[in-house]
Image (cartoon, rainbow, N blue to C red; front, side, top):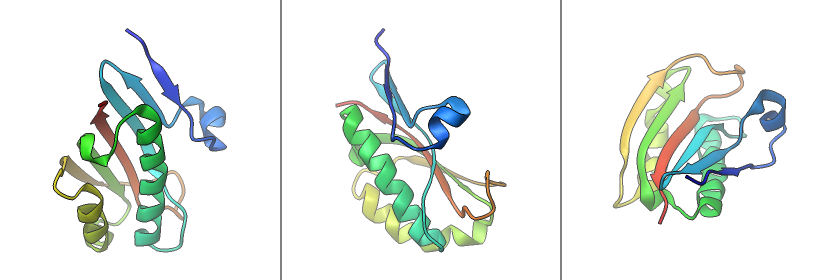
Length: 119
């Protein structure tokens, strides 16, 4: 089995010891990803941009996503993200879970982790 590791070049990848995504056995596993911005919707869009770039490098896309997990410190902030997520996944929605939990830094409002198939 060939394993391909994809880095986004973020400062935390070498510091913590992880990569943005790993391609193995026909799947791409994208690490939990936070975005930049002040609001949950800005951070959601930003995280999806980083994830989209990793999926492209892996030979995949949002249309190929089979599972996504959303982590939010405040579950009431999830609903404003729904239109962004519906637009991102369109006619190909993945299985999804939302978890309310603490994130690595209080400034982060959402973290997104997903698994997709490689085309």
